[in-house]
Amino acid sequence: MVKPLLANGVKNSLFLTVIISLLLSIIPFQNSSATAAFSRQTGEPCAACHMQSYGPWLTQLGQKFKLDGYVAGNANTLPDILNPLSAEVVASYTNTNVGVPGGTYYSNANGQSGRNNNVMNDWSAIYYTGRVTSKIGSYLQLNINPQVSYSMNLAMADIRYADHLKIAGNDITYGISVNNAPTMSDFWMSTPAWMYPYTNSSATIKPAATPWLNALMGGANTAGATAYTMINNHLYLEAGGYTSQAAKMAQGLGVWANATGTSPQGGLIDGGAPYWRLFLQHTVGPHTMMVGTYGLAAKVVPMYQSGYGTNSYQEYNVDSNYSYMLNADHMLMASFRYSRDNMQMNSSVQQGLSDNLSNNLDTVMLMGMWTYKQTYNMTLAWNKMSGTTDATLYNLSSQDSGCGVCSSANGSPNTNSFMLGGDYIPFGKGASKLDPYLNLRFSLQYWAYTQFNGASSNYDGNGRNASANNTLYFSTNFMF
Image 1: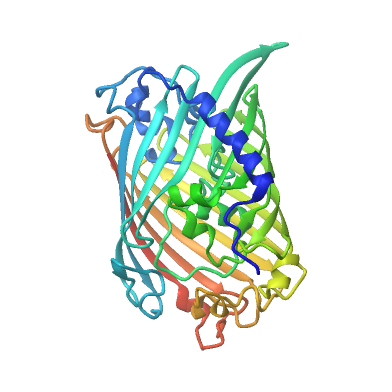
Image 2: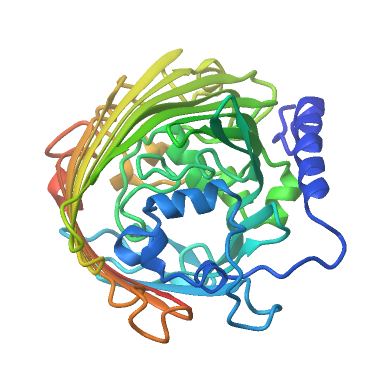
């Protein structure tokens, strides 16, 4: 009899043992020097390290702060026991062009989503961030989801050791990052962990397909470690590996439901998955240019069901970012990402979850930004996704989720969208005495679809058009 795979045998156990050992070896078990929330620790306003004064888009100073392990600064403004702690509340309103049945987005003991015009507390978060020792720092984010998933989970984790050396006149920063998602260790906006928009609606219809690394980031059910180096602030190299968390670990961290979801790319990483990252960056006057690549490859047990072998996934990314500081008030930025997912679906075909033994998915993202006085931001983005037609894989109505309006009637994942966004960040520039203690961001997004799940009209086979999913999303992030 086939049983759900609750642990990944010897291969996963060995891989997790290495990761957990690294974690335990770098976290001191004696009293250590106090850490602090980043602004209070450094004594700098948010705008010093973050474009748009809230983040996560990093300035060069912010990049260096992260590369150095979150340890810089000695300007603690609160008692040591409180300095590392921050909290965030995210609330939003979402309107879609055409509503959906109640409970489509969430349904739990706290209630269910409405047909349209949903107002919600997307999440609240508690952060522990900053210096642990002189060479070890952390970024830990514990999310509390009172409505959508009715749960608590470790959403983001990055614990790193960093140091410096000089070889033949070359300045080298090197370190180790133990984290819970591929690209969590990165600092460019063209990676899934930090990509704009920083907050997305939980009450709108999403395409049936998504790049594999995006799916892993959303599930938060991986654990891994990478080693990295930056040479002369030009060449960045990083390599490591990830695996899925064992069942009890995922349950304890609140991400088991994400791990066993019905995403076409969902499943358990079988053993270890190698991850790589390389980029070149260069600054000349007001211009900064970066071009790079990153990716992940793994054997995957779909839906955590053993007895059917594995799928094989590889994702390759090429990304580039450019920023131009016109003057002290105006900043321009452009970002590009191309993703290629190759999927060998042997296990999924055996389980009746896919028609094809081989699928692929290509995704292109192009985005431009204008920021004024680190306070006002306008963004225009284009996203295009195309791939192999697979009627079973992308027919989510036939899977456990039963989401008919999320499905592709013709089996195509092809989706084309435009996004217009605006942000207002009143604090974070050092002009107020409250700046080290709170920050605020108001965001407005409008998503327009010209194609959704393979069609412009009747994409789900029940008369719903792509434009029905056009979405207006207003959110407020309050950090304190």
